Length: 118
Image 1 (cartoon, rainbow, N blue to C red):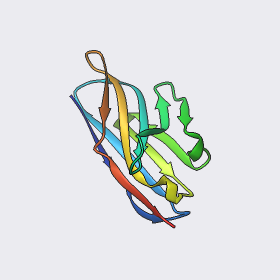
Image 2: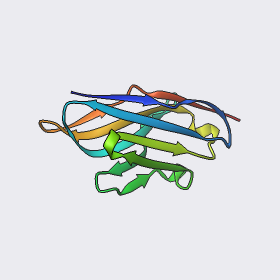
Image 3: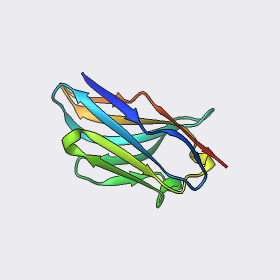
Image 4: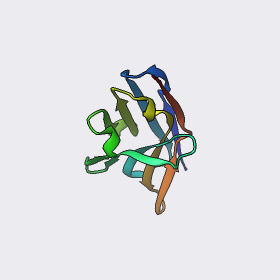
């Protein structure tokens, strides 16, 4: 089993910054990819940023140049640095790890609320 624990959400004014963290623990596993998703009220969950095991990254267009995904492999932790936040960035942010553990599986964090006030 793999458990993910998120931290770092909160309330911030537009233009501010937040840093989200997501740490994985559990049995021995291999991480294939780590990502951050968000879900705003009434909207579907969308991929915000992804980092693959080789280090390549992808971002949704709306956050390019403002958000940075990074990882600390030794700690099985992924981060999302969010700068120049906008009210439309408001939502619940979820991390997802794609791991190999007796096959490939997706594991999700519990979600953390990010609220950006105008």
